[in-house]
Amino acid sequence: MYSYNEFDKNFLHQRVNEFRSQVQRRIDGVLTEEEFLPLRLQNGLYMQVHSYMFRVAIPYGTLNSKMMRQLALISEKYDKGYGHFTTRQNIQYNWIKLSEVADALTDLAEVNMHAIQTSGNCIRNVTSDHFAGAAVDEIEDPRPTAELLRQWSTGHPEYAFLPRKFKIAISGSSHDRAAIAFHDIGLCTVRNDDGEIGYKIYIGGGLGRMPRIGRVLSEFIPKIQLLNYVDSIIHVYNRFGRRDNIHRARIKILVDELGLNEARRQIYEHYNSLKNESRLSSTDIIKFITDEFSPPDFSTAKEHDLEKDFIRSLSLKNWAETNLTSHRDPNHVIVSVSLKKPGATPGDATAKQMRVLADLAEQYAYDELRVSHEQNIILPHVPKQHVIKIYNKLNEADLATSNIGMVSDIISCPGMDYCKLATARSIPIAKQIA
Image (cartoon, rainbow, N blue to C red; front, side, top):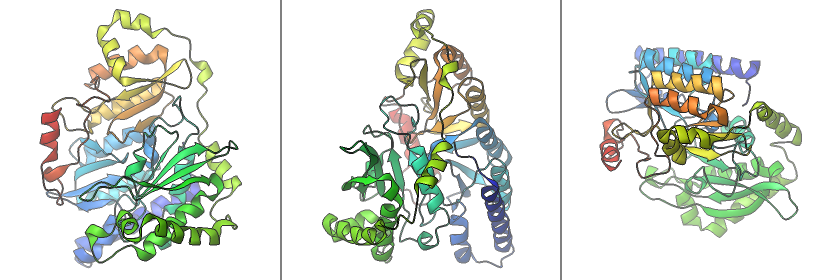
């Protein structure tokens, strides 16, 4: 995963100090709520039904054990001892106090985490395939591209106040594990006839009151030109997207109103003005970021026959049928940890459970975890000889529910229990269905 340098770390601490001052001015009454609103949204802070909600960014859903332990600590220090993992691979805390938000941000910065652009009318967290770097069918690990987009979009002055929020997702193969068709921009990694890796671009997807499936804008954009192309899409949206009606402000409505062909024409007009410059990225930048995502040394794993473990434990076998996925290395598997125990709130994990997951990643899975858009946790690289140990530890922590991909593996928004915009109590409904 990407390692923060001194510039990155200093930037986070400067943002925390800036927001700490803004929070104090709000508490002192110097700032009105209207004035404070855009400032808190830039730092992941929402006002919900009972309290503030604090959304923490987990870029492309990737984190390590140190980060997971810090998320557990934050849930205990500033919330009620649990966190809610979201469909966009972030985590939310629903009971934080305004006076403590800056302290929570300081704790996050200590492990190179933040809440920047997790809310507001900006480019949000870039999400990715949760099996990235591990999937058998992967053309290329999509996380370096997601990181490239993250670095480009963070604090982008032109796109800080878009007509509405803007979401981008990227899949590493033709098998869409990132829900790219339901995002403002969806990127599918592909190869052209010459074997060159690039992206098939979808535009205008989304859910909500006016759901749309994203439409193909381009069959192939070379990697070196991706930022120019994405910039062109958002440039056109920022210029022509509606600002008079919040319910018709997403890019899907702009595509409806312009028509796909006219939207494509305007985007290509801007894209062609940038195309020959390659000003937004270079092969050196792409290589530098890609090198940060080198895979673990899989050669240390031993050959192991899981069938022998299954003979000894029927419950392990049943769990493995739903919660294990083949890995690109034959001596490894991908472990999906369900946060959907029947009767529990989908996506919730206690501080104790988060620490168990951190321990398992550190001890048995190359210190890497993922958050999936189905609100589950993934151990992407698990040597087969460790599967039974992981299962036993998960069972002890009430995390061994064997339902990945089944009806009971249901996702749910917070609904009226927390959200001021909701029109239904979705959590109880999800529990009843499960």
